[in-house]
Amino acid sequence: MSQILASGGRRPALRRRVPARIAVLAACLLARLPPRRIRLVLRLLRRGAAPATHAQALAARQDITATSTLCAGTYCLQRSLATTLLCRMRGNWPTWCTGVRTPPFTAHAWVEADGRPVGEPADITAYRTIISVRPPRRRRAC
Image (tube, helix red, strand yellow):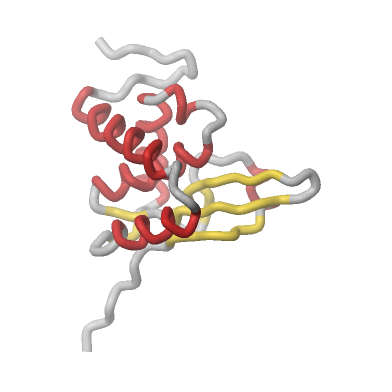
């Protein structure tokens, strides 16, 4: 019998929780790096991945937030990194973004797919994107 979480969602099956936990652990380590290093690591990891659909990115985000209380809370950097890493483990890549808004000054990190934010409130449009790591471009056949 599956467990119901306080948020009303269901806890993912073990086969989905294990990769989510690995992604959360990797995201916590990655979040300690300076922004330029995070961007470099993500650019390396995105190689060979297909662009993620909104549904794929949302499923990854839901698995992350259902598995980790840290990522279900206010830690947007770890949540966005973990979502991106879990998508990559599944063979696809969303757009990872960080940005700021003023006033008051606030920074935020999020994931986009199909040109729209994944699992974010409507006020995300107030943020100006500073860093983004988009899916790799597909080379056209001659």
